[in-house]
Length: 417
Image 1 (cartoon, rainbow, N blue to C red):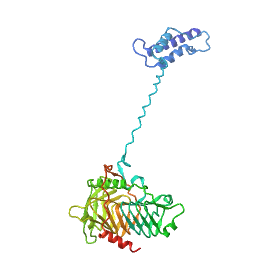
Image 2: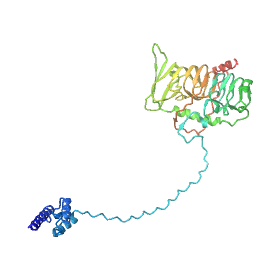
Image 3: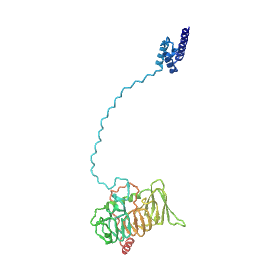
């Protein structure tokens, strides 16, 4: 009786499992929605769990048709085939080495002016740096220049200090170059001197010079004055043609008379200002109110203007090395009288009459006479102008006649020493 009961119980369990499997599978009517439960039913049919009494040795798990159908449906629907392993791709062919471009043949030597392939021009011609003053005719002074001096004519100096602030690295450089004769009665020269003509050197000068420095006569090829004059004359004229970007007004107040106010556009780094000689001469104090960091001041003579440019009072148009006064047209004389000028002067065809004051910048002129102190501050901005300076520039203007104010002042000045 017990065996019949257990057999009937097993039959009911198997039947219920088959019905559950079929309801889950829904073969032929709907897709399988729960593969995990179907797999559990298959495993349950194939395991001993199909026998409710594990001690019943006559109960063995069966693999009937229902289990086979479930397995076939599971394999067809639930088992995903592994993607085929792609065949190894062939290595791309190594490209053939590209031929090197042919080396162009050497160009024939073409005569060219120094630095004629640049657009940014400076006041240091042909790589000559730290030049405080470059004079194409004569030079006479008893003051000092912190930087180097290049004089294409005769140089007369007394109680003069030259290039003493350049430092030890410049002690063996040619810091004084004279294209004519040199008269250096007293003073200090820090560095070497090269003189084309005769050199009359006082004992105080020679005694101060170290054993590594000397002043040598008969050296006439140290500096190319002709080509240098050509360069700076054309640079001067090219800068004079630039359009102005700022305005200058004369401000007259009770507390400040003769105040020239410079206002730039602010759209350019280099602001260009145009002044007549007469307007410039009225200014006893010059100040930049606005504009770019570099000021280029072009001074023109005009039809009925004076031929003498007077630089006096304070001149505050920018930082050291950022201001250039460019003397245009036929302005014969630039007079420095009580000037505190923080700017460089480009006046290759003008004579500078240096009565008093200080110039902190570079000076390029036809001639220089007086006791104005020259402090070194190289103009370090880019002068981006089109220049055809391979053309021959006119010869330097001759020094003033003996009866002129310039020469009278020079004679009076030098007779004191």
